Length: 115
Length: 114
Image (cartoon, rainbow over all chains, first blue to last red; front, top):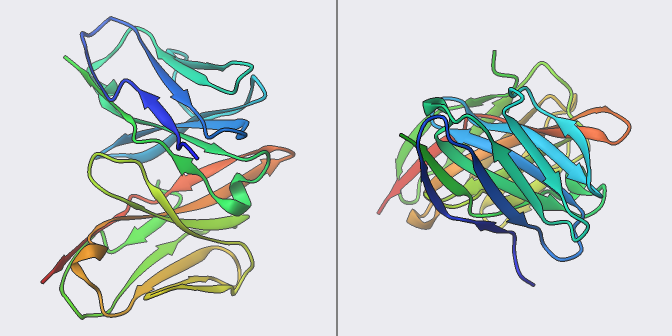
């Protein structure tokens, strides 16, 4: 069974640009969550999608957005990049309603560097 | 203010020693999950505990959820170099209905020397 796939693995962008990251969940998993990981703040929740609907959102500015497609694949977009957006962006999937009880499967992440 | 306090932040021990990592909060969680993360990779789930007072064992690892579901501990017996990594605790915060998400501690970086 394939795991959670995130692309690209590494990305270098310039301040002010925008970026789109992609996540393909485990087959059959309909919930996709996104997290930002930095050395100072650790892992912080960005948002969760289920059946193409945003179900929950963390405390991040509106420059961070996402969406989910009918095949459960998800994308997150960051517009007007700032230096502080440099981080490892992680995607996690879980079976319907089961993440709290059975845990989440994380992808390897996309390392974004803003210069 | 960190909602989930994890301690210690760093731990360097010799092979064969025992250790305990703590995860504390003033909030009640629906579940508490422990993950291990290697450099450059995503976290990998070790265990989920759901019931207050629950104890789960995974080979040399023992996980405990506090009675009030506000804290948890991870105990490793006879640590081995392969246990080296970043250990993360995460509490599932339920906001009602289907809304909820994981709140992560900042992690414990464990180094086990041969």
